[in-house]
Amino acid sequence: VDAGEMLAETTADAGGFFSFDDLDLGTGDRALRVVAYDRAGNESSASDALDVSVDRQPPAPPTRIELASSSDTGVLNNDRVTSVSEPLSFRVHLADDANAGDTVTLLQNNTELAQTTIGAGARQQGVVTLTLAAGTLSAADYDDLNARVTDASGNVGAKQVMPRFTVLDAPTI
Image (tube, rainbow, N blue to C red; front, side, top):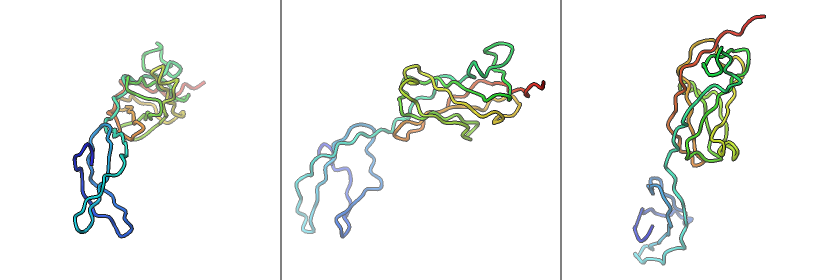
């Protein structure tokens, strides 16, 4: 029962335990109470309220993904050209609703490449850095990297696609 509205019914097992498999509470705060009925149909008093907060809202996608300046080794410091001789670092700019404790995942198509948890400092700066080991991406043009945020409730946000960038063969000396 929530605010006097019957949300679901179920039957307790022999030990008095019960559960609900398909209770759809929607997003928001709820004060849930339980009312029991005996076999004769007599109704018990409502239990004390169990306050719950239901979060089903996925976080917004990151606003931008870019090569970190330390990894952008092309002629210009923002030309999205890099080399496989160093680990690659990517900066993921966070949307305003990202929170400390949320997880940022860098993917190639749907394959996870790196993941980090947003700390308080990163939340304040609005950016996290994810680093791939040297050689994770081979020499090629890439337009299939993306990032997404998963909040602490497990809601997965939409992906933000990184603009095309190029990984060059490592120079030989």
